[in-house]
Image 1 (cartoon, protein in one colour):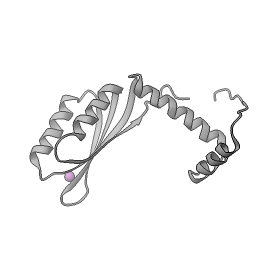
Image 2: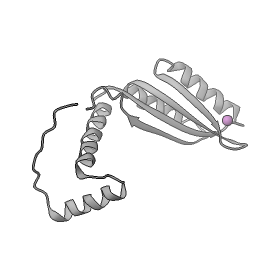
Image 3: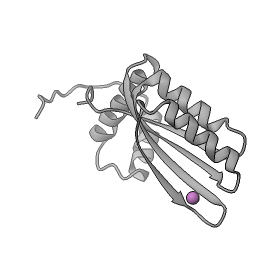
Image 4: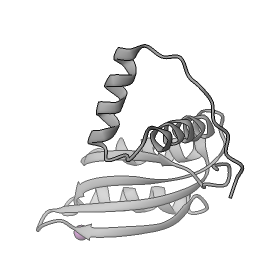
Length: 138
Ligand code: NI
């Protein structure tokens, strides 16, 4: 386990009270773990903004009856196959499909892929979840 250090922080009472309330709702058992997660989040954000090696998921929802749309989504994914680790297709109902595409690679390329998929005409919902390879997180 990594060496642990303790430090004191000066903070407005109202602000820390608000923070404590918020993390209690999120089920944190103590401040330290919540603060550690905030710090990690900052570094994950940085990985995405500085063009680092990242991992994440792209979720898209569309109507599969639109064959042109389905073909377009497949073409885009084949063009970026080096970035895609895997994909899962869920038939939500008679019309709607959900695809969860796991990506790993350069942040900018992952963002571009998400934008490309989301902007295809007929895609009802598209969202990139920016996660991390975990390599640089402690
Ligand atoms: Ni389907």
